[in-house]
Length: 197
Ligand SMILES: O=C(O)CCC(=O)C(=O)O
Ligand SMILES: [Fe+2]
Image 1 (cartoon, rainbow, N blue to C red):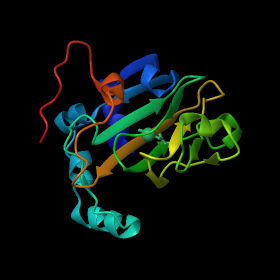
Image 2 (image 1 turned 90 degrees about the horizontal axis):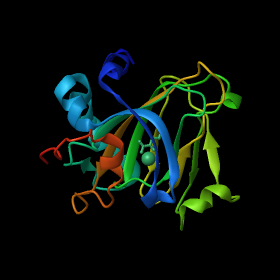
Image 3 (image 1 turned 120 degrees about the vertical axis):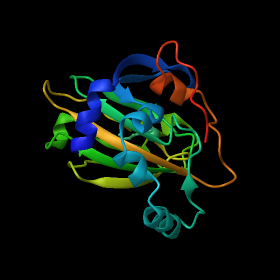
């Protein structure tokens, strides 16, 4: 929690709709994996933890491996203004291990995860297939993020915050992003794509 809070000073505000994801809204402050790698030892070190990756493989039945793309492998998303939301999307990589460091204590204040497993499209989130979860600071969850449509609902109250650190994992045959959505959320103006490795 302290590390995520420390890194917020280098995060960048984003306000746009993502064309490739049904124009769903992004109102949040973000920090991409390439900057996290430059600024933090703890997060990249935790991401590579072998016991964690072995556990992920056991739980999911997939051959879980780290993501090669430095931008997307670990990211921080901060919702901190009334109305802030991480709108509907699927991730490029199959597994998202999301660690929540801040969240409204009352589910009525928003910042809930909504997801629809095995969704044919993002509008599954607007059907009876949708599920939701309220997380507390210190909670984590593991999501099949490439096939579940998901979003974080808007913060409803001024002063509320909802912050998450997302560790993405993949399988050996699936390296390389499938959409440009991560570069829209995590690159900075004028920045060259980070070197993959
Ligand atoms: O903040 C969350 O719970 C979800 C994060 C997410 O969907 C993502 O980073 O792709
Ligand atoms: Fe996601």
